[in-house]
Amino acid sequence: MNDAVLDQAGQTDQPVITPIPLRELMPWIVFGGLLMLLALYFVGAEEGATSLIPGMYVHEFVHDGRHLLGFPCH
Image 1 (cartoon, one colour):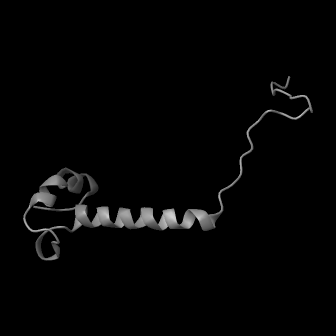
Image 2: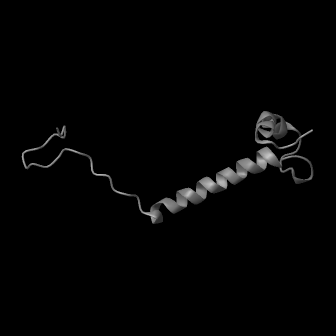
């Protein structure tokens, strides 16, 4: 038995799903990729000669994440 609700014209009362064009998604995909690369840099390489921020503040903030992702730091 079909459980779809029919309106007066005999159409089902189901939401219409339309795909989002890739042209509209691409800027968000690029933005998300850049954010992920920035996060990867801070977790994986922000110390020593490549440090953008002086001191050990960033290193200590992401220390456990470094170990979780397999980056050596000591």
